[in-house]
Amino acid sequence: MTDPNLLSNQTSGTASDDAVTAVAEHVTTPPARPNGDDARSLGRDAWEELRRRPGFWISATLIAIMLVMAIVPNLFTFFSPQPDPAYAQLANARQPPSAQAWFGFDGQGYDIYSRTIHGARASILVGVLTTIGTIIIGGTIGLLAGFYGGWLDSVLSRTGEIFWSIPLLLGGVLFMTSFPSDLGTPYMIVVGKVVLVLTVLGWPRIARIMRSAVLQVKPLDYVQAARALGATPLQIIAKHVLPNAFAPVIVVATIDLGAYIATEATLSFLGIGLQPPTISWGIAISDASGLGLLRSAPHMLLFPSLFLSITVLAFIMLGDVVRDAFDPKAR
Amino acid sequence: MGTYILRRILQMIPVVIGTTFLIYWMVFSLGDPTVGRCGERPCPESYVARLHEEYNLDKSLPEQYVRYMGKVLQGDLGTSFNGNAVIDQLATRWPVTIRLAVIAIIFEAVIGIAAGLLAGLRRRSFWDTLVFVTTLVIISIPSFVLGSVAQMVFGVRLGWFPVTATQGTWQQLLLPGLVLGSLSMAYVARLTRNSLSENLSADYVRTARAKGMSAGRVVGVHTFRNSLIPVVTFIGADFGALMGGAIVTERIFNIPGIGGYIYHSINTKDATAVVGTITLLVLVFLVMNLIVDLLYGALDPRIAHD
Image (cartoon, rainbow over all chains, first blue to last red; front, top):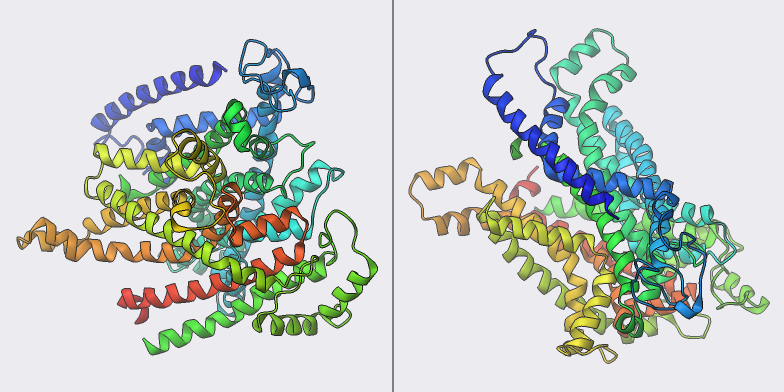
C-alpha cells in the first residue's frame, strides 16, 4: 500500500502549487477582466476555492482509491502473498501481520489483507446506490413540492415527515428483521434490501434541501423574467432551479454517504445486514470484536475498522470542504 | 404561543398515524408476518393461527391497523414466541437504558458545548483545529469499533472501568454511556462552534462591542445563549440515534437494557419483540420531537410569532 502516500504527496504538491498560482492570480487579475463576459459563476468560484484546499485533494484521492478497490479488488491483491480472499488455512488462524500475510490472518485463517480489500465493495456499493436512490427520489419530490407548492407541497412535505420520523438504525433493524436474509440469499438481494431501507428512510433529507433551494430561486427576478418570456416549467427547472440546488444537495448527499456506509456496517455487526459468505468490513469487525479475540488478535479488528473509518472520513471531509467552498460567508 | 402549540400538536397527528401505519404495513402486510418469529425453525401451525387471530390478519388492512394501534396504546406490544409479554420485558429494562442515556446526554452536552465554545471563540486557532480534527475522527469511527476498543483498553487492560455492565448500575454504565454519547458529542461540538461563530459576526454583536460592552458580557448575554438554541434542538432530536446506538453499546457491554433486549431478540429471531419495542421507541421519539419543537418555540420567540 504505497500508493496512497505517493498519491497524496503528489496531490498536496500540486495543491500548494495551485495555491501559489492562485495567490499570484489574485494579485494580478482584479483590474484585468479579459473579454468582459466572464464574471465567474458560483460553481466556478467554488472550484477555484476547492482546488486550493488540501482537504479536497486528500479526500478525493482516498475516495478514488476506495472506488477502484471496490470495482477491481484484484488490482490491489494481485501482488500480495495470498490474493484469494476465500482461501483459508485453519493452521494460520489469528497469526499477526507478517511477510506471508501483510495484515495477518483472521480466526478462520483467511488472509486479512485480501479480505479487507475485497470488503470495500459491499460498503461502497451500499453507500453509492443509496445516495443515488435518495437523490433521485428526494430530488424529484423536493422539486415538485417546491415548484408547484400548494396542496401538493403539503402532501409531499407531510409524507416526508412520516419517513423522516423513523430513526435510520431503528428502521434498518426493523426492516431487516421483517425481511431476514439467510446464508442462501444472493449477494445482490441482501445489498438491495439494505439499500432499499436506507433509501426509503433517507430521501426526505434531500427532498427538504431541494425544496428550500427551489423556494429560494423561484421568486427571483430572473426566474420571473424567464417565465414572462414564455419559458416552460421544464426549462426553468433545468436552467435556473437545478444549478442552484445542486451544491447543497451534493454536500448533504456526500456526508450522508458516509453515514449510510456506517449504518450498513452497524447492521452487519448486529448480524442482520450482509451475511457471512459475503466479505464485508462490518462482518469482519463483528467477528473480531469479541473480548477474547480482541485481546489475542487485535489486528483482526484494526485493519477492517481502519478501512471503514477512512472511507467514512473521506466522504464526510469531502462534504465539509465542498460546503465551505460554496458558502460565501465562510470565505 | 398558544396557537403555535396547538398547530404543532395538530401537525403531529398525521405524522404519528403515518409512521405507525408505515411500520405496521411493512411488518404485517408487505412481508410474511410469521417470518423470524419462532427462532431458527418455521412457525408451527398453532402459532400461525394465534398470530392471525391476535393481529386480525384476515380483516382488511385499515381495520387491522386500527385494532393494532388500539392494543399498542393500551400497552400491549405483543407476546414473544417464548411466552413473555414484550411490555413486561421492557418494564424491567427501561431504567437501565434511561441511566445509560442520561450519562450519554450529560457527556455530550457538557463536553460537546465546552469544546464548541473553545473552538468558536478562537476561530482558526490551534484549539479550533484540534476540535475540528478530533470530532472528525470520532464521527468517522463507528460506535461498535469505539465500544469494543474502549472495553478492551479501559476495561481489560487498564482496569479503570468494569468490563461489562450486567447489573446496569450507574458506575457500571459510565464507560458505555461515554461511548454511546461520543458521536453526538462530536456533532454538538461542531454545531456549537458554527452557531457561535455565526452569531459572533452578527450586527448586534458588533453594536454591543462598539458601545463598550465587556467581552464576557457580549459572549455570555448576547451570543452564547442564542447559540445554544440549535444545540438544544439537536440534543433533543438525537434521541432516536441514541436508541439505535444503545442496541450496539448494550450488546458490547452486555447491558440488560432495551437495546440489549432488541439485540437479543434479533439474535434469537424473535421478531415480535423487535417490532413491538421499536414501535414503542418510535412513538417515544415522536413525542420527544414534539417537546423539543415546543421548547424551541419558547427559547426562540421568532419561531412562535411567524
